[in-house]
Length: 140
Image 1: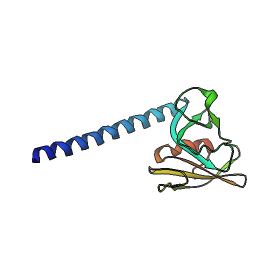
Image 2 (image 1 turned 90 degrees about the vertical axis):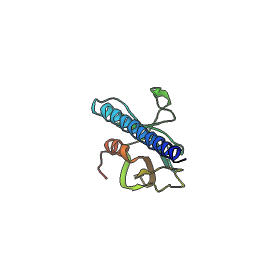
Image 3 (image 1 turned 60 degrees about the horizontal axis):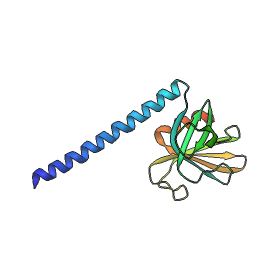
């Protein structure tokens, strides 16, 4: 019985370490893509009363300094929706806190922005918010 419990705990810890290594590997790949000027894909969502709001999880894409949203990770640019970064002004960052409006179940960061007088929220993983900052030209 004790041996089975030790095996179970060991397998759970091993799976966790494996997952962490995969996440770190994906983060490093995004960093390398950004450093070399390639497109950077990372999970995200855009909400607000604007035509470009996504309301569902998808992929934010940083491409040549512009920020886009796509329903799927990939290079079919015809399916990407541009975010008007020229008219977006970052106001502040906050933790998503399982935000019901955003439908987030993970600990993401929300970049609160204004598009004119309209509030817009761009949410993504805390690690990836630096790419949103880069697109908006801010260190909010």
